[in-house]
Length: 210
Image (cartoon, rainbow, N blue to C red; front, side, top):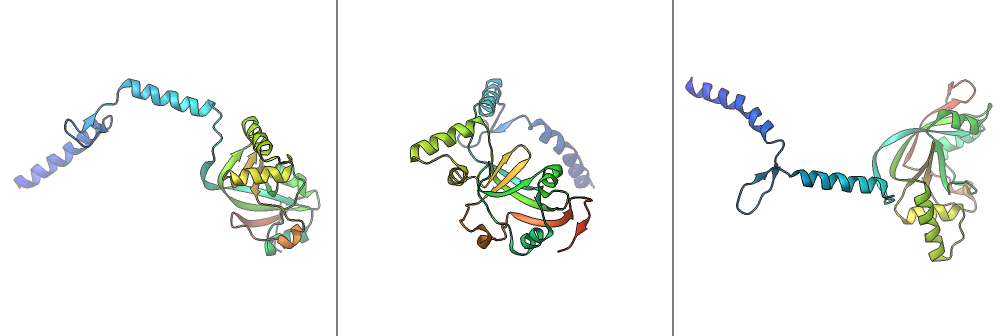
């Protein structure tokens, strides 16, 4: 009975000890105390470094764990059927480089589909995403100048892929980066980063099966 009371008292005191050490950091190794309180200066230094990273225009690839829902508009049911069966085709002449274009906004996808078209609801794995802006634009221009490359849509994709990016996001538009081929229809393939969830008519949002 005495051992039971002692174990219950020890159990009750354990949370208090754990809470007391939440503001302490483990130092480890060597002699002296193993725990110490971080100084206010270290907190201030870490906050300053965080602000510098935030406003310093860091453009290194950001690994974004997770996926997002995006939409792809197409003007005909036949195109949607081909995409569901064979995959997406990568074409050129796009403002944000070569790749598969999707939109996080349903209205944008419907605008590309038109009143007689359809849209595909997709689950997109973002991976390393580049958020295009003035800093990335300057970096891209320097990359083209160093290689004597003409600045065009394909060069945007090549630059981003060589820098380790997998997707590009600008506003409501998401581009799953992929090189363009001369005959894109022959190179249709199912990209593992894009999974088609459903297909709907743009006019009334009714789901259709192809």
